[in-house]
Structure formats: C-alpha cells, structure tokens
Length: 199
Image (tube, rainbow, N blue to C red; front, side, top):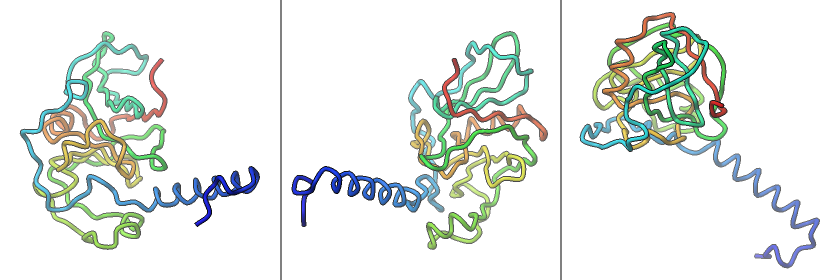
C-alpha cells in the first residue's frame, strides 16, 4: 500500500478528498445508534446535571407554550413566559441528519408503536418493520409527531444517549422527561428547531 508521503502534493490532496468523501458516505450508512429494539431502559442511569430537567432564565419573544430546540446545545426549552423556560436535555441527529425549521405537533401518542421509515430500513435491514409500543420500544414512553415529517420528539430506551448527536434526526428525552413534556403541551404546539447556539 502506498502511503501519502510517497505521493505528489496534488495527488495527495485528491486522495485526501476521496477519503473524506468515503468517510462521509460511510457516516450516512452507519447504524442509527440508540434505536435498539427490545432494550429496556436503565431508569437508574444518572444524567449529567447539564441535561437534567430544570427551570432556567431564557429570553425570547416567542409566547409561552412554544418549544424551542437548540440542537447545538442539546437542549429543548418549553417557554414559560417572564423570561423563563423549562429546559430538558435531549439527544439529537448526528452529522448529516440535523435540520432546522418551524413545525407544529400534529399528533401525540403514549407508548407509541414504531414503524422504522424506509430510509432507516435501507441502512439497517435487520430492523423490525413494526414494533408495538412498550418498555423495549426505541420511541420510549411518549412521542410527539412533528408536522408531516418522519421526525418526532420522543422517549428512549437508551438514556445514555442524551446529550449526544447520534440519531437520525429525531429528538429524544429520557422517559420521565418526555412524559412530563407530553403532559404540558397540546397538539398544535409550535416547535422551533435551531442548529446554531442562542446568542
């Protein structure tokens, strides 16, 4: 095998670009970590204090009841008014699967069933085509569906993934937190997803 040190600078640069493209493609093909059917959540898992539910100061012009997701911070904020919000720690989409926009919650479900979308099945053909809701379901205890997309705010059977960026674009909370959020927001709630940190 020829190492980069034996190549001319121009050829080495092209080889580096090809390697980057190959790694990027492999990243798109990698398994969706955290979507393991049948795994039972370890409810004794202790979240980092940064990702535990808490009331925080949060300045915004958005009305109370709005959800703001700050992808870069791994936080979801439920606006309370008077400069405050309830902040939850979340897991977010990995590189290549992050997005931003404004949607509404169009449906809510307790212990939701899981039907992996075709794109996920293509990446992981071994996944079940359908899984009934329950403790071993990767969607966890609750799900709130965003617009007509495949994205959801949902629970998880992998609490250790909170604070990470490894999903396929959904936002996951520990089951206790997603149940708390679920009880606080109705269908129709506005959800703002932002990638950049709040200034």
